[in-house]
Structure formats: C-alpha cells, structure tokens
Length: 288
Image (cartoon, rainbow, N blue to C red; front, side):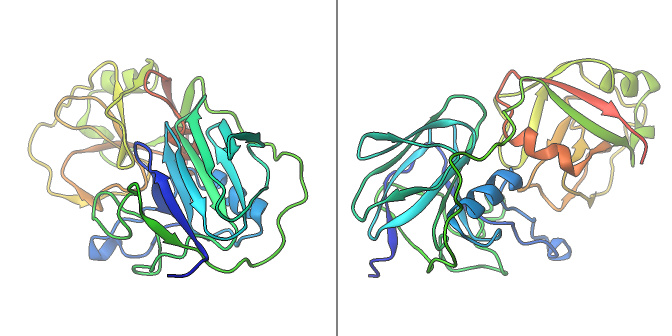
C-alpha cells in the first residue's frame, strides 16, 4: 500500500469523491455528475496547487475526518466549517499543511451544505469514463466514503497558493434561480407559470445530488396525458405528479417522462448546491 494516501477516520453523513464530472455520455444514459458547486471545488484545487479538474472530497452537512499517510497541503472551501489538525484550529478557505499521521477534521457546516476538501496531488481513485466522480444515480465511480477506507493520492503538481484566505460567496439566505421557460411550459396553465415565477418556494429536506426538491404551491397542468421520455439537461425544472418543481442537479437522469416547465441558468446552480432545507427560492423568468 502506498504511503501517499488518505485514511478515512470519519466518513460523515455523505462524503463522495468528485471532479468536474463525465460530460458527453448522455446518449449512453450516463449523467454528467461531478461537484455540485464547481467554483468551490475549483478554488480548493487552486489553493493547494492542483489542476482545476483534480478530484476532491465533497462533504454533506457534517464534514469528515481523514488522516494522511504523508505530509500534504489541504484546503476546505464551499460551506464554511471549523477545520482542525490534531485538534488545533486552522484556516478554512486557505492552504494548510497537514503532517503525515495528523488528524484532519472538517467539521459540520455552519452555513450552506457542501464543503470541498482538496489535497495536494488530488484524490487518485481509478477513473471511470474519464472521471473520478461518484455518481449516486448510476453507481459509476467510487462508492461514498466509509470509515476505514483508504484513498490513494496523486503527486503534487505545483506549489500551493500564497494567500491568507480566499474570498468566496456566502451560502444563500434566499436562492434566486433565473429560468428560461420551456420546453413544456405550454403543458401548464398561464396561472401555473405565473405562480412559478412570482411565488416563494422553499428547499425541501428531500433534496439530494440528483435534484433540488421544493415545497410550495403546486403547479396545475392543462395537458394531462402521458409524456414519452425526453432528454434531460442540468438545471431542468421538472414537475412530477405532485406539482412541486424539481431542479435537476449533477446526478440527474438523462431522460424523464414528466414535463419540464423551465430550465435554470447554469451559473445559478452552484448556489443551489449550498441552499439548506427551508431556504426560500424564487424562480425569475428571463429571456434567452
């Protein structure tokens, strides 16, 4: 076993390996997957001197604890949290040296949902279809972390960044999602479209990497017949039979049989990855 590795001491509620995903395989039924908050993952990599597409750890709400077998540089970005090395507080949002055998604890998020932990050299699990990302829907990529697992690391590509702390956006207290209406907006009444773009929804606790589920007023359909499965894209706002909009995120299916009333602009989706249950959501209609 190589000494250039991470031992997982506490896996947390859901910690996965993520990079920029595996785009270009939707015709094979393979979702893109990848980090739900790409800017945060990319920043973590830049801070430790990795290429932007190196694999990182994506934690969910309660962080994780790992022990490197060699001295590494790490950085935690995304959802703010307390970070310690052998119990000593260290910086969040900045490169930190962790000696071999020391205990790195990434604590629960104090705001937001997902913290990204980059390690110099990147997490070097075996790629599948060109990506090291865990895809919860298809099962491709490495399994979510478990206590006692060992993750191989790559060799550092360059020096870490020389910064005290890197600025990054705060998790949203209100999530504003710009949407382009269609392609199936005509399956809904004009009133339903007005409700979507004028009323306040909230993030449902049932949200996950596949999609951001909402709570709020249901949307009524005027066309109620069955819809043959159609291709789905990142950010598609699908409306299932309960009438509550569902925003597809990175692990979304490649096809779906419920109508898509709108599509969220891609630059707005990283904030959706950090929106906690109960966060207000506003869908803002914009032109192409």
